[in-house]
Picture 1 (cartoon, helix red, strand yellow):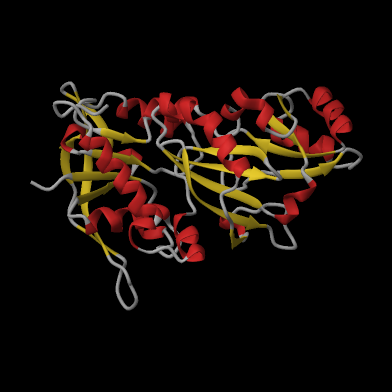
Picture 2: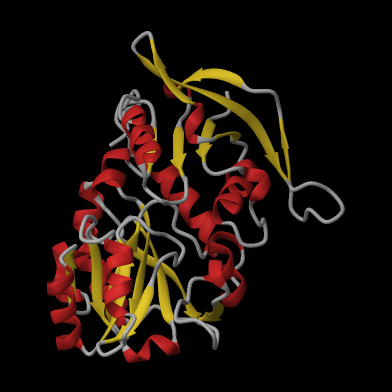
Length: 328
C-alpha cells in the first residue's frame, strides 16, 4: 500500500506554484508514488482519543500551463496516524489558531507518524526569539516593550531594525536612525504603548547587499539564496519584492549550522531556514522555510541534487532506520 503524506498549509489555490516550496515537495513525493493529502489548520480536530483531520486527496501538476496546477478530491475523515508523514507548512503568523493546531498535532500516534516539523518545536522556536540561545551569532539584539529602554538602546546602536515578535514575510519591520523624529511613534505603535514586546537589532549596513537564506536539513546546510532588497525598501523578503540571486554555502554558514544542529534535532526541527546578513544570524525560520525553487533554479540543480529530492531522501532515510516501525 502506498504511503500517505498530509500537507497542512494555507489555501493551496492562492499559492504561486512557480515559487512555493510546499508545492515542489508535493510534486516530489507524488513522483515517488506517495498519496498526498491537503488540509488547512481549521481541518484538524480531536475526538474519541484521536487527533483527526478532514483532508482532500490532491494531485499536483508541472508544468501547469493551460491547466490548473492541482486537482482536489472531496474531503475525507482520517486519523492522523493514517499518515506516514505530516508536513506542518502553515505560514506565520504563529497566532492562537496556529498554536491550537500544534497542540492537536501533539496528540498524534508518535510511533507511526513523522512530523515535519515537530509541533512542540514549532511552539518553542519562535523565529525572532529562539536564536537568542546563541546570541553571540546575532547582531546586537534587545527584546522589550519599554519605550525608554528601547530609545536608549537605539541611541547606543545608532541605527536599528524594529521587528514585531510574531510578524512574518517582512510585515511590520521598520528601520530608524536614533535621531529620527518618528522613532518614538514607531516604538509606541509596535509595542502598543508598552503592552507588547518587540525585538530591536542593530542595523547591519551590508543589509543592502543582501540577506542570505540558508536551508538546513537535519541541521546540515543544503542550499542558499541571496535575497536583495529593491531600491525602495529595506526588506529583502521575496514576498515583498526582494530579488533572488545565486549564493554559495560558506564556512561561516557551516559554523552557524553546526552550533544550531544539536538544538534543532533535539526539538525535531528537521527542515529549517536561517537568515544571515554579513555573517550574522538574524532569524531562524522553522514554520514553513522557503527558497527551494529559487535555489534549484539559480544553481541549475538536477535529479537527486534538487532541494525537494534531498528532503524526501532524508525522510526516506528516517523510515529506513526506524526500529519495529517506530520513528526515531
